[in-house]
Image 1 (cartoon, helix red, strand yellow):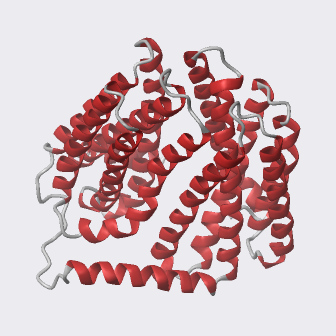
Image 2: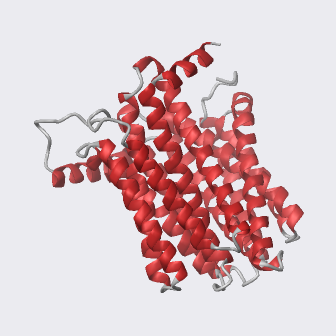
Image 3: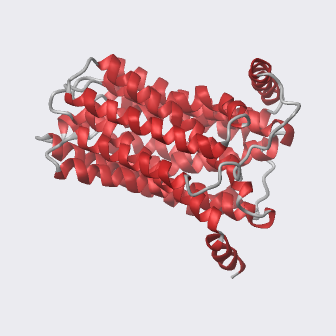
Length: 426
């Protein structure tokens, strides 16, 4: 197969392999660190986790990606990207060590969150730099394949890192600090691996006509406003993004509920609750994978808006039917269903945005999409914090999410006549 041959060629490219190694180590460290943070907030014996604490942790993990992301590229086009990987990962290793010491020293919560926020904010620069550097190590003919392989491999590395974090924490007497130090070691390994790449190999090229930083930042901000204005003129994309934002909001609210159930309602010990959470994450991830398999066929048969409507409608029916029992097995089935419908809707939304938005505005619109996607999740966590009881059993949250899914499905069915997607699977 030609793709297999191209993949072999990619892996024979020395600098591509080295850049991929930097990504794998960095994103596996991200997975370890994120699980350590969630574990400390939710399952640490010295903490009586609340929905408010969970919402705060989600804000720390997700908001930097959205708020820093659009402006990261301005700086990445000024700094040597190899140095971003080197110093960025060294900085994250040092900050992660600080986080571990704060855990051991029972520091004030605000100091712990400040340290975690710095780690996740730097991560945005590293991930954006990895994508920007890829064309410097791969020829244009294989760039599409490289763009597919690298992020997918990075996501798998982050997932593996999260799994490793679960194992280490359960094996080492529930030590969150040890897990954070493991993340620090992986960040440092990523930094050392970046030294195998030449300083100027990854760019950016020196630009004699480079604009001032303040001007570049202002241009970026104006570009986002222009992207929002363009989006308001593209009805298909705006409607799909609105629906996806609601679906993501529901997923976020139910995620916080499952965290609280694992912590208080379903387990008699922290280790048992953590194991249940790991199982729930794995089951939801299986739903994401199933969506990747099913969605191309479903969109070809139904169209994009109708498939999104079916996803929302399935969630509206199955989520309360399974969730109102507040028992582990039905809720794990619900986790799979919600993983499938959330990712299925997202894949369809991505396609709508890509085909409805002019190429000149696509990057800016996807930046706005990223903001909506993460802010919806964090907003849902904040709402759940106000509604959830201490043990996580909340019929209003389950029914409220089902109602939002149902309204979204109805609106998508109303909009389906605007969807011009072919029925041939293309």
